[in-house]
Amino acid sequence: MSQKVVISVKDLKKNYGSFEAVKGISFEVFQGEIFGLLGPNGAGKSTTLEIIETLRKKTGGEVWVDGLNIDRQPEKIKQIIGVQLQSSGFYPGLNLMELIRLFSGLYNQPVDAAELLRMVNLEDKAHSKFKALSGGQKQRFSIATTLINKPRIIFLDEPTTGLDPQARRNLWDLIKDIRAQGTTVIITTHYMDEAEILCDRVAIIDEGRIIALQTPDKLIDDLVAAGFEKPKEVKQANLEDVFIHLTGRTLRAE
Image (cartoon, rainbow, N blue to C red):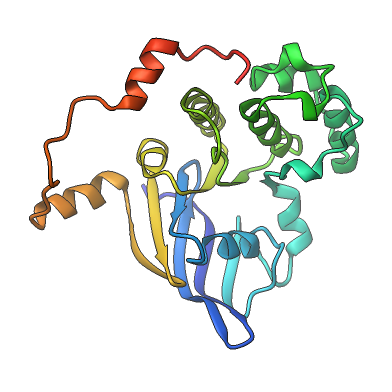
């Protein structure tokens, strides 16, 4: 049985003057998968994400989101997607419950604020201001706000940057939980271990072009089959594993 395509990008181009940031890329995202856009800084991945999110105009190509054309139906697309806000998007004087109610009103979408906070393990911070949260808590709350309009697709742009190992792995669990509820997740990340664990498929972008698109396992297997060998013996664990094992993964103040 074929999988339903929820995002279709065909020959997408984005120029800034004479500079070609995105050079005719094409890919599809299937319903219910976690799809990763990977690449170094300046590769074009964030630009691609912002075009699909209707936040940036494209120069050429076609983009469809759940059957909606980005040129003709951008407002309808905005109604079915969730986009993670940066910290600057939150009013500093409001607590978490008040912020959720504010966004609920903006979306005209009733929501159980307490239940939403419980889902992201922040129920004990309901009456705290956003600025009082730790880094991991801020990221979990930011992701919670993407769920207020009950989106079919959410976009997370480097959601774990700057977090400690515990906070990163707790956020991974949250992202998996969101996908388990049927939501499609598009993620950009610089952390290859994160992409390997979370993503069903990844597109690797470099200098505005997709240079590989496959499951992480298949990409790794192909590299090994081509004769690649690590320059030294790989241990069965790494220092991050030691850190997590010794400190635990409980959701304390991150």
